[in-house]
Length: 440
Image (cartoon, rainbow, N blue to C red; front, top):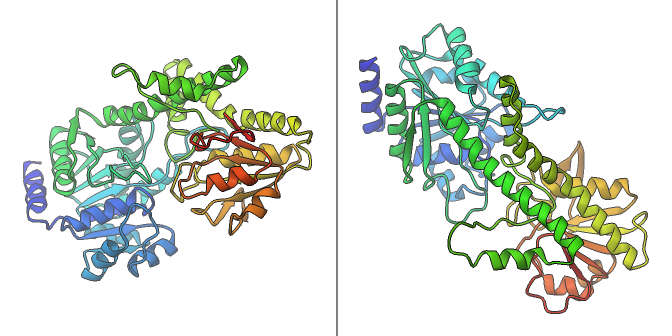
């Protein structure tokens, strides 16, 4: 074991460690780029041939990756991609960065992790470190991934290969924190594995690498990060509903609370939760907790509140139309924004689509405008954004609902021409004429 540890540390030091990244999405591709930029020969693995072809031709498809950097790394031979997992035999370090969605019953879908581990195991060789980065329930690394790797390869964890967990912390669109400078948490099976995996990330990233005692601690840490946000967003969403009944502006309440310099962090209400983490991760923990005959009551309550917000927003939209003597059935409604957060093209789990569903079920005729998402696919159907937002276009709708607060929308123009506006993101807070604006 000591020989394996020293060999890997030396390879990290002289940049001869060969790295594989499984999954070239929002997490995997930026990570692969950073590892290649640090001087490590890197190969990306993905089952989608289109992604593989784009990477190998130097064409970027992830917002947090710089086009010129990807092109230069591919041209230099430092970065390549393949759908052939047999090339795992050529790498010394494997990072698994695949999706961890929920199934139709709101339970963890571990198929991507399981399938990736099976493919890696077929070609795993002695002297390799494997790290799971996909957000998941505590215990996944040791209970799911470890047996697959050992049985599929015939190797023994801790003696022939290292295994650990290091949660991704990707925040698409964040202008300050990227993969490169975000602190990293590492938890592995055994001290040697932890030291080697941490050393690799320290050689690649600028942020602190924080070591914990086990993969389970790192897995729970990641769930805590996102559940913390889920619960606090649930709290403020519930207060938004109450404040509306009481005739109090929740946005003004939050601004006042923010003046306290300690003990308070601002969270904001909205039409629901979106993205790859916050809406999903608490379900992983609540599902796992039942194995221990424990119910995460606070977490489940916040999830119920947040899950109901799209329906609540449509109820509010119906009341706005009623005040304008119009019925929801047959009303023309424009959604401004379908990505799950402002100024990004990622629409995974976006609450805008659930708002859309409830509007459609109520008989409304719905279209959308999003400069970041000109085309999208939802429930197997393809949709296109209105190409240009003009005064005439805005005036043609009975109601405009702002579901994403993109900064590159002409909101003063929208306010001047819209018949009615429901601003669920409070992006029009600086507009003085508010006669046709209602906020969440």
